Image (cartoon, rainbow, N blue to C red):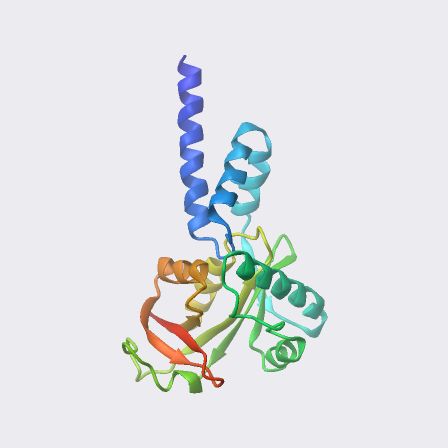
Length: 219
């Protein structure tokens, strides 16, 4: 009886850990489905490999042109995640394309997130004023007087939980004033952004007129 009680308590703790991980994961496109899949792991030894996976530290490095095939696959899967979660318009028509990725690499903006030496995510960190942030509606920036860096094109492979947190932690260690924006329909990213510590500031507009929800973090 005691052994059974310990086992149930361990399972409950594991379930809480899994739920917390999902909420901080930037690619849980179908939370209910993912939760069901993760909980089934509690029934077998495969839970150990899953835990090892999410606990493995991630590393971040500058992207090179040799990373382009991996980067394009990351963004392809990220677009699928968006579509599956009901975010139909943010990265339509193959955005970000290879030309833009190459431009990010040449400018030193593109970074690769790796786990066990394999690329699982990517993002661009761009220092300096972003023209699309010069006007904001329905709110205001927390601070619009000091230099900042903007996080763009954050994406990950399916199942690569923790990429967003690794990205935000890394960027915060390099700049005390960060901004990021996302589509209104990107409920996953909106949750991850605010859970990490960004604060919603208002609505900005891209060069093509599309609106985005804008956030800022100050150290």
